[in-house]
Length: 211
Image (cartoon, rainbow, N blue to C red):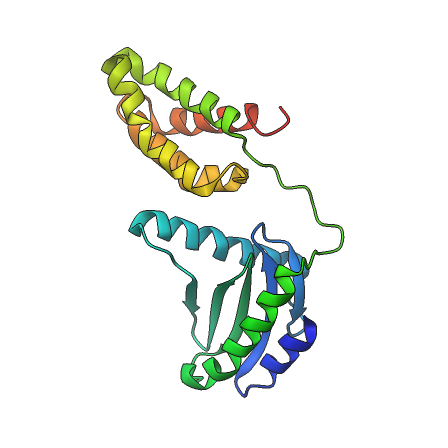
């Protein structure tokens, strides 16, 4: 995998690149000195969550996001079960980059499908459907006092549909970033903002997988 990233780094204007899995675990990197593994893993995780969040908001698949800074650009693209990110000059021709980028993406996709796994991969907390339903039920109990049982359950349908789209293996970060805002919106007016945050975070910790 490093060889594929090395080829990408030979494109004039490309500073470096790295690959993370869907949970943000660093799989491979060809970046300049000064970029720690934790920093790259966090960037990959942020890109993955951002793509999922935008996809839910727009109801369409999102496979690439970009960040532009004063002198450089960071491009993150979904590839198989992971994310490949490229740091390059802001003025670099994207058409030129695309010629090599597409080839590298195909090679990385093949490697990921073959099961590239990072060393010392950390355990990622996941949310089961049972635990997610328990969170929804706790929110419904709050809503039921004002809206009644039928409207209270109806208010959670959007969150339930999103969870079903993410799947049984949704990470706790997925639930926190993508689903909790929907619940927060329903609770506005019933509780103070800080009380809502504390209430939802408490539920999340209580119902993490294995608890």
